[in-house]
Image 1 (cartoon, rainbow, N blue to C red):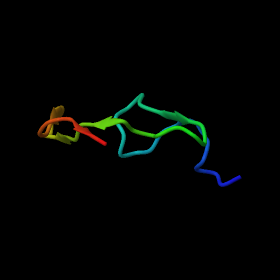
Image 2: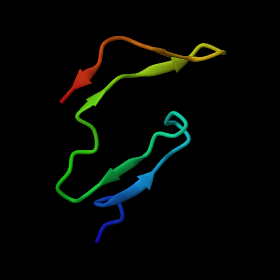
Image 3: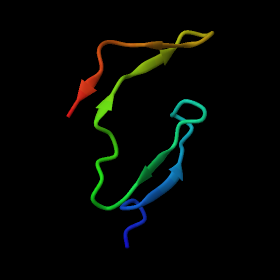
Image 4: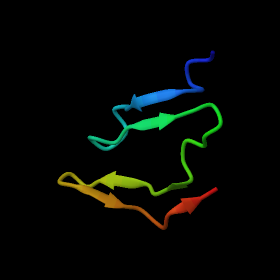
Length: 52
């Protein structure tokens, strides 16, 4: 099995703290995304949520 077809509590340094992914081979990882940027103090949403 390819290692990215199934994820369990997977997190990366570019994700917000505490955010993880859990997927199965037939899942979509994201249905809706919203980008954020760090303004030096906190995370600020950028633009509108994006859907598939």
